[in-house]
Amino acid sequence: MAGMIACATVTSKEIATIQEEESEIIVSETKSIDAVAEADNNHPPIEPGLSCNDCHEINLDANTTATQLWISGEWGAKEAGEGVMPKDQLWKEIVKIIGGIKKDSKTYVLGTSMNNIPLTTTAEFTLDPEKKVLYGFHEQGTEKLLHIKNNPHVSLNWHVEFEGNFDVFLCCQIRGRTELIDGTNPGYEQILIDFLPYEDGARVPKDATPKQRGEHLKKFRQGIQKGFYISKITIDRVTVISIDFAKQGFRRVQRWERQSS
Image 1 (cartoon, rainbow, N blue to C red):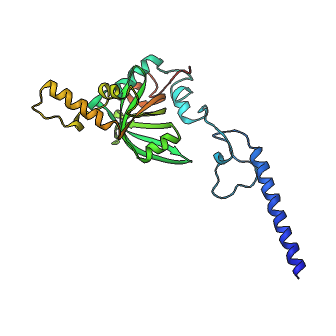
Image 2 (image 1 turned 45 degrees about the vertical axis):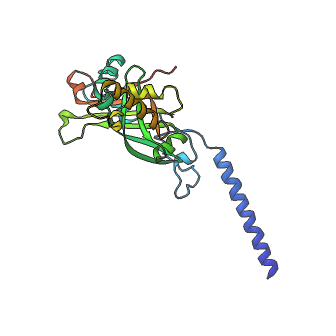
Image 3 (image 1 turned 90 degrees about the horizontal axis):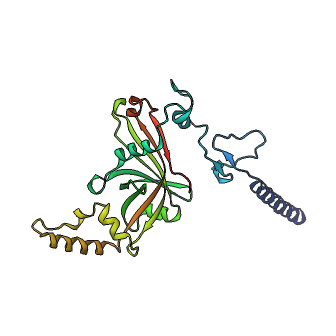
């Protein structure tokens, strides 16, 4: 009996070793796939809880998505390529929609991800239309900053609240890369001065003279450098959905993309 148990134990170990080796072979043979790919009958068994991106690199070229059809494909009364707004004109429209500095900053839904776990938060950002970047101002130690430190790729959404009226439908979806700027960066203070609405937090006395106001704001800027980060998001892509575009003869869905350097 003891011999039979020992034999069974060895067999179990051998089976486990074989399964492990087979798993390693499967992982090593995985290839990149398109986002629309589906598993066929030749695909190895998929363990519960696993998804495609656990083993494969996913190609997101957007060439077959509904969005891509709306942007440039044959859709409705538009032929393929018809109704696409010129890039420079589109950027001007984007500036009209999400532009504005200081108190004209916009509140966005910010999407971040770390270790395949997504997070959405709300945050205020202001647009630098020349550099095509967004600036935000954040207290240190938040979960979203931890995400960004580990994965700088983010997405943002700004939209007019939809109340059932398609005549005022307006939405901007943004993808970009984030740099976190701390108080030791030489450009930190100037970004505050030029773009971010920090002044209300300084609580300058109403009866302060211009000189006193300047001194008060400078002291406040110096005081917050240790506790706050500025986020600089380089915009790589903006997808805009606006009914006003259709009224101008363009497609209602337009996409601006930064030219690769």
